[in-house]
Length: 533
Image 1 (cartoon, rainbow, N blue to C red):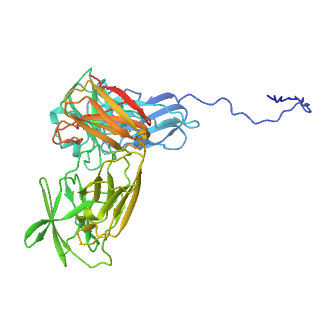
Image 2: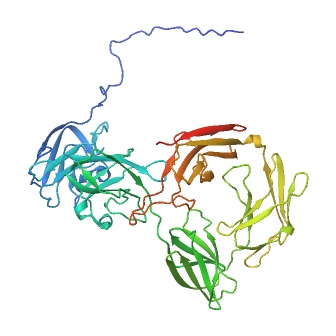
Image 3: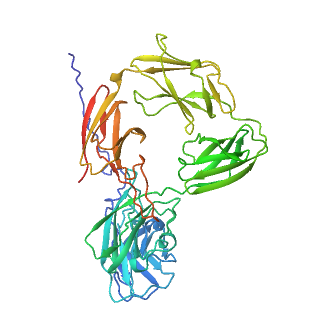
């Protein structure tokens, strides 16, 4: 083996001059947060009766994100004026813009908004406190916010206390609380301080518009049903959830000669649509929007619809009638059939076709499923109107190539349109390209429950409903890292149900297991997951 030797020669540099050129150093980097020199009135002042507060610092500071970071408790109807903001200053001036309540302790928590001007080092969680009475209230309550459905919890969650003696549910929608705090950035813990002794109700909001009022359509809420007594040594966990909106629909709009769009809020799974035919309510065909995230239904008009159509929307405790005047447009939606690209990546998942119009009839005698040796494979079909899919169920073999052939007229849609000649080719890999996962669950405390495994994109790859089982098998799944979550299906409807503030219903309990499970090709993974007692 050849050796390569590097020879480094050091050449001395002659000093021609005593002077040495170089960059001027700025000195050591400032790593110390600003320090308060004094405040007027002083912090924790009692019998406060003024309108202005001045806080002096040892160095130049900058106030930023004050609208997001500052927490004033109890909240004020008129926002205090705080100057300066954004520019360098050695002081902060606070002007109060309303009369203060008697015998009340106020706190101004600046969060991370006060920073050293040059280096941006925060004076973290600085609080200025004063009382309009003879003493400063010193009790507190603390706890943690968790998202009821998602693994990660929102930042900047507002936590509020309402006095039990005057509390009713409507206060959360239109009145400010008596005390507030906020989890602020990258934190799920909360503490509300400087509280009077007494009984309170505890509520949290992901308060998007920072008005301390709950907007059920757009904001998340968490609440404790029972009142709490202060002082208390307890720590409280609140589960933040988005309520399922009540069903509401909007006036349909014409999309094409044979299709309307119907906007809606809430859960469309139990919705039914009808039109009047000879004064008889006749079902309408409809599907979810092609845009999967849009709360819009595609409503397919019957062939006999001419100048107008009366659409009747029904759901549980909901009834709505619309009279839609029709107009002639250039085009109508026509039948198109494509191969559905599933994201589940399981070996045994069914083959599905997507359609653009509702399917009325499938002529299986004109459909042929063949293996690579041209041998025919028997199958059954199922139509899912809401998803606009036709699924094919058949015995699938590994390392096999399949071809699905549709002769002209194999599929007929609601408008008597017949499909053209179509062919779809797809492969099945080796079963050894997939992995198997066995889960053994410990400390299950009630039945039934649902276990779901999620891929790295958060999609549900597979789920199982368990009425008594504690060992579960997920066979032939795509190699990947999987997250496992479990929820207790207390109302036994096989779906996770959110909470409802007015009905005082908490969301069903969702649990994420912290470990990611690595499933590899041709592996059998046996994983024990233990729930906390």
